[in-house]
Length: 289
Image (cartoon, rainbow, N blue to C red):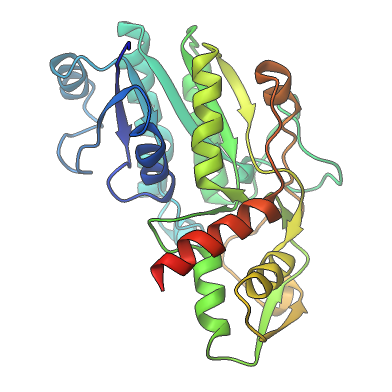
């Protein structure tokens, strides 16, 4: 078997990074998951030295500044992780012809559409988080190479780290009612599905920008309601508007992603988010309890 050596940035503690490590660990990969501060990843020379010393051929970059509201008053650090880091990785990977798989977000869009966003749609974020993630994309695409793959995804849930679904279920155990926003609609995505589908693209030697989420759409309210139902809890969910639940960063009202490009290249279609959610809650939530 041909073993491939991959570096997962964010593989130690990130929600997606750990899912990639779990998925790839059962495959033909030799995986390196360094600590966040093990290397100065913002230094091109040190990053290049580490990659060469460890004979890395693939880099999965899941490291990012994801505190959406906090980013509004911390643009410096958001830019550092979401734009400067991809720029450095791109420079090194382009030089060494290394396969870089970089993860981006639905937040690069402004949310003004009412049909799913395709990779042909022009991004234009309203939040600092989305703007800095978009700047990271642009830095990579300014000088693309044949082994650059950018995957936009959204609304992640899955094992190994607390996420929205976990929080809702834990709150529902102690409360009779939860108020959850209903006027933001997106694509809930199971991290283990995202990891396995990412590897399908890598196996095809694919490059460019792709959207990759579970099939279907939901509001936060619908995702919360289905999570509570699957967990067998009786807590009621009351829909509220975004204006009733004010947050610092503006969210796209609609950010459903179209995965048809992924399906065309791989010949497979991601399963529905409801199927994936059931698996997550029945298997991982139960084992956790």
